[in-house]
Image (cartoon, rainbow, N blue to C red; front, side, top):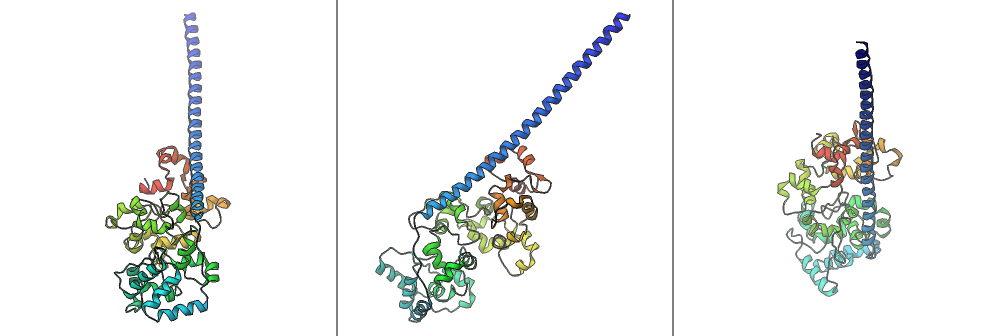
Length: 392
């Protein structure tokens, strides 16, 4: 009986040791698994950060390659030159054709007399909204956006060159004269040319952006095939939008067109700027026009398009773009690592997402990526993915 008890005791002790050993092995396996998951998550976020750095270099290289084509020269449009334009404009269509020729913004053939005849033919038609000049001025839009020009007797392009540009009027929906003028104030002040003339003669070739919602570097990085003398904005309006190219990091054409079926047959960005935002259509998962205007009633009362306001002003004033992105929290998380004069949300989309533990309070970047590795393949930031899923 005693021997049997001893045998049972020994067996129990052995089983206890085996259980303890198994428990230790299981715990060690769990620890190793947790460490492996952590290491994999860190590797994923590091690879995403590296990809963001590579994309930044590609943008810089694309702009540098485009600039290497060379830019034109700016004329000095002093008071005497401006007076000459005003005198010519009063001489009717022949003088207006000369005003256009002097500006250098007509997309001609390089044959001066031939091109001058075309400018004269255009000027002779006056303020007909159906006419499309061979210049980056959208005539019907210019007239509709400036009702005070009803009954205009001169051609709209000549009007812009003589008066409109100095009055701060925009020549087209994708050229923001006020913003472009502020971005290039020193050179415009030194030469006195209109913002549009500056852009056509030198700005486009330098890779400058014509509008807050058209990012030239972002567009060029998508490798559009531009002919000699072609400008990124012109390419987008003619061909790029048809190829699904994005004009800005905060404008996702596929996302937008899905929500705007009537945008078919035209550049999605033009549709958004002309009427999409008024209908509350979002250009990107992280920007909600209606929500933004609700947060900024002064912007809504002024009738200002919200994405343009956010990119030019709101983001730098630490205003959030939507309920999905807490911009003040992101700015605090980035701290001194946020580059100066860089828009915070653009910084997030271009790599900042992988540089912070939590871009939004209670939203850990690493944990979100660990459970959704497909984000690595798609290159979507966590908050953008979360917003696309409606916060699920």
